Length: 472
Image 1 (cartoon, one colour):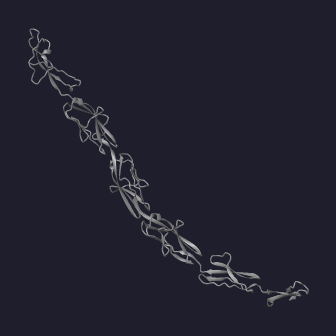
Image 2 (cartoon, rainbow, N blue to C red):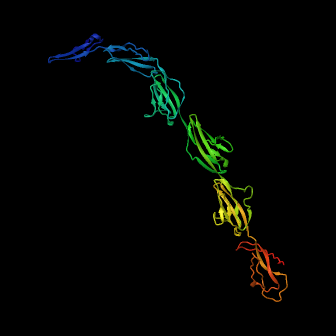
């Protein structure tokens, strides 16, 4: 120890080479004639920490304990501790051993290697699972390997399953649905993750639905020659195939007469009466079938019997005698049954009069024909598909009758002119001539036959007169 020079006021004590035994409590005392004073100072002698054993890297099996040593000495004795340091692979870790006291700090790094890690492995399973609608289904996700035990989660279309959904995860990790619906169909993913890695497996859930045919009108009506469409819109999973039959006969899907479109509609290009009837649409897929019957009615244009190749504009000529019964035929066929109407000289003929009657067949019957019934008759048969007509030119002839006129009878000439004297008319004869209407006649008069033919009263009269001299 070295004290300050005598007479110095600093009173400093210097220890050039401090040793551990120099540690202790030192007292400084100052004295003069007035008195004294003292103070104590504690001297601690120590050194910075030193690592007695450098930490070494340790390798340990997964799940077992590991011991990392870190011993340090110093004065005062320094505490030693480990803390993670830096970034390392998933199966490794870096730890820092650190010791510190008032005289300094010391550090050393150790590596911990964990063995036995295994990435997850999922058991192979079908990539597609099919289930009938409203039936239960489970999607498997079996763990084959993985250390540590992987965490498992399910995704649908890449997104987590929403909370409160109808899905449930069972103890074996499978995803379960008690009642599969069409909305549950899609791509599901099972994802396994642990410290060694991750793996996922995708599975497609197909919810199969038996065919259903959309309800439509079951009775369709078209006109002859106008294209007809019978719809058959069906849904189902997988997409159903559509077939058509007519009265148990299968129809080709493509052809000049029948054609089935992509949506299942049956198209008849030029329907005729033979196409009318019952048709059955059947939708079929792997899980079932559905059928629906439809009826097609084809309206056919009216056809008048006996009007085959003859020109409909050329009237048929009919001649009858006055008083006869005349029937003008107009038997029409068509679907639906056509309505028959008659005109005479372009004016409607009532269906029932005293002498005219429209028969159920469509023909017109004229009772006790008169000359005034003569004219141009036209029958028209019509329905939604069209119309047909027939013309008749009816001529009613008046009956022949006899009229007697005065004629000269051969014989002696009257001796004088005077009023004529006529014998009585022959039986069954009549004459428009009266004796008073005759002028004096220079011969002997008698009755002779007169032949006439005419038309009904009120009409123009054409008379042919054929006189015959009285015999005897």
